[in-house]
Image 1 (cartoon, rainbow, N blue to C red):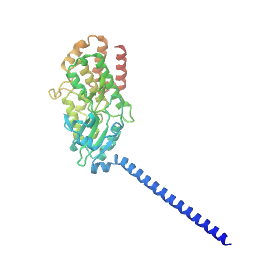
Image 2 (image 1 turned 90 degrees about the vertical axis):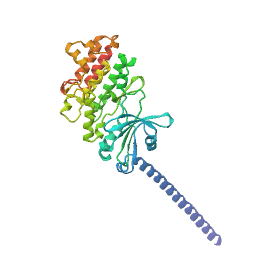
Image 3 (image 1 turned 30 degrees about the vertical axis):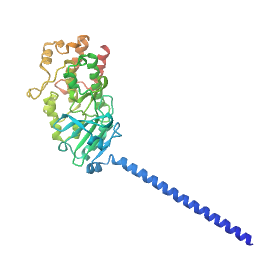
Image 4 (image 1 turned 180 degrees about the vertical axis):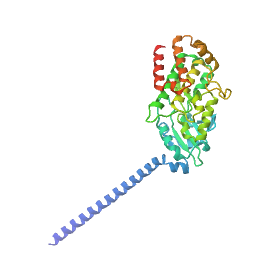
Length: 355
């Protein structure tokens, strides 16, 4: 009997011990799971912080997009750099990061933009756009005082305007001219037709075409006017007029359109094939059509050979004439007379196959 009681006692104690161990294991697992959940929460909060508009506006923060995942606020705010361009609404900086990396930073003046809530949706759309002929948005920073920075890759070859004005030998080569032209057209085609909602560039000009390796063109500043307030947007249009890129209809209309983008594309194509700048709108305030006089005279006298670069003499003249005619129809005074971007791309591809 006594042995039986001892056996019962041993079994009871053993069961209690096993139960105790099980309880400890359960508690340990719960604590570990809780800690893991907490770490996931922190990670999730960290990710959400990147797109939390209120946090961005109150404290200043950096939103990162594809290609800028490793960027930090320190990288873009404390990196040594130099001013490479200025406008009425902002300043362009070349920023030198550690490791020989270089970024292009566009500072937008607080007085020229709206609140973060007003521009964040546009920033998110622009940050997702990727195309071989468009400059990607790698990051966006908004500071506590309303300052805003757009972060882009830096292209060491500079912009198309510099390339044309420098009169380097390659700028007179048909192969280079055509490659740049078709690249710009394809980038604009993506903006106009490749997205759920068309994006109008609003300030297309040779200074906003950046050149990469092998003269691959990248359109920059597309949709930038959407981040600006109405006053700054109007100033952008006036700057375009001074440089010879303001479409005739914009003397009466206040907003750019796909047709005004086409006009500007035509001006750029003429710049490429003639090596000449558009007429300065400030020097010719009464003109609605800012084509150089040499082109005007050639059009009137039907002497197309007076228009294009002499260095293109090795290319069949009919090819160059078709290219010039396409550029000129893009610059038609009436918006309805201009081709759309799909028609332009198709025409350029036909010219390319014949050249």
